[in-house]
Length: 542
Image 1 (cartoon, rainbow, N blue to C red):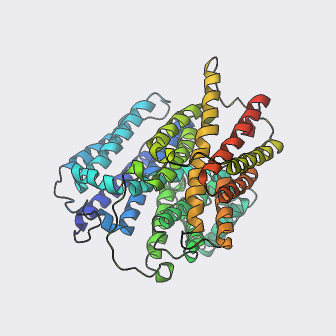
Image 2 (spheres, one colour; image 1 turned 60 degrees about the horizontal axis):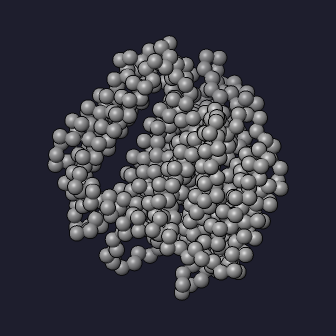
Image 3 (cartoon, rainbow, N blue to C red; image 1 turned 90 degrees about the vertical axis):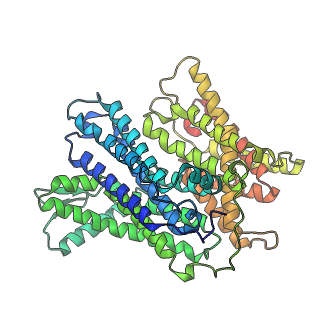
């Protein structure tokens, strides 16, 4: 029997119990550590530790929501897994033990003790959360069913979990791209209008975006302007469009992006207004806690889920349903070409999000990122090895010329050297040459392979929508190249140069008819840029 056999019914009561239990536990844990303990995190622990705790919990919210969204959108995939959910309630004892462990730090966290209990607190939190989730997972299905489920649907589930877990941290990392004065100004003006409409007399300082009364005021900074919500909605909608691309009607389904962004911005105004009212009405602690707590992430996650679930009910966004045909089983992970094109890039981006959260000099840990990425590439090496690596003379010339053009552009545009410490941080002695060796391996060998497999082979070809019997039109080819180059540029600090580089790489791939030439061009460009950076001592060039 396939996991998509709809004849197997999913019991709803155990799912409702699990969802309510998890929501209640998250709520209790959040309220206890936000309002029930006299322990201001940033006054006692390093900011990095506070960021890990805050973003980690927000990431857990979003990961759970992403899995729930996948269940609502693809229920047939979960039917067999969950057909016996709730038959064994003993795992709920494990869940309860985990919830109790997460609350143990309440007994010893006190203001003024500094970082003395930092590691014990994190040990209880991580261990407790692991037991909580394990208990619910085993309550929903025994280990055997989970193994069978993961062997067939592991790629989709892994993608949903990874996207959800990384969403808050990735949204924070992308803040420089979204931190536009226009967004914060619009939010400030909307909150001012709404609070006045509700009859409250407040003073405002538009220059500093401060609003409130003599007893309570807030600053609508860019970080509080719904920018994270916009990023989160964008990520969830993108995941939905990818998972259901065969069922959706493009380009009209792209309207979900502006609708989601508008809904996120509007409800964020309502959230800030309500929290401002709480503070004015004599509840400043609750208002400040809510204003800077995970309430925003929960709201943004619910908005993203609501937008997608609403979209499922709009017939005009979907193609006409085809006749029901059995779904072919998914290939094993190591033999899945789509996974080979997506997962290593996802791993690369995930390390880019995690490393800055655990180190004040994230570039120093680049060798760790290279080793993790090498493991991801090694997992799919049988697929990469089958690529047509032997290029004829014409394709080789185009690839090399494309790489030279990119490198000349990258080196010619001046970049001032950094006034701060070197990227390898406090490393010294033989550790410095080793750092440069890993930096070169990642820059020249691994990154070109991973980025080209994702951007040019997967993303651009998907947007282009060509098939052997139906070549893509010129308009779709151009739009796909522009969109891919735009996303490629968004992930680089030097976005203008990266945008042009993305267009050149698209040209190389199209002119040579294969992804290998694009990988070679990318590698040539990175080799020259890396060499120039090392010779000049200005690693900001890379």
